[in-house]
Length: 139
Image (cartoon, rainbow, N blue to C red; front, top):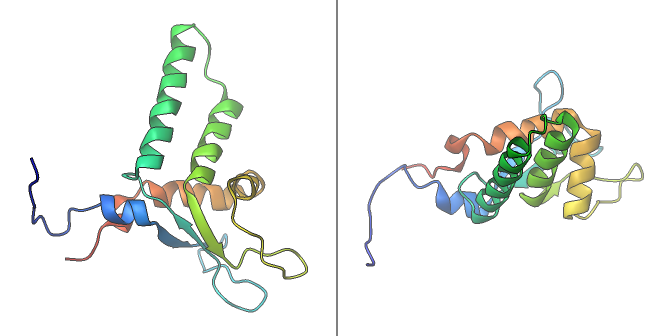
């Protein structure tokens, strides 16, 4: 059945699939700037994207398997899984450069390394993806 719904303000799927730029903030909550004074942003898929949902389901299956096997939760393993999901949901960025000012290409491996090295950015990305209001088009 092919239905065309009109539910203004409730579509989180479209922007979740397209990705939304997240402004990176410094520890004081101000926009983080690159060496040229431009805001640093990371474009992230949302919680209703197919990629995020598949990764979240896989993570849940692993947790259930570990619990069924009587294994205690492992913080390092949980953290690694979160980093993997965030890296997989990172589509691009602006202002992420080497110390010499060269732009670093956005890859899953590079994104994972940023989230490992910079817990502040990892936490911001995790909260951003978890906030569906960021992925809702204005009515």
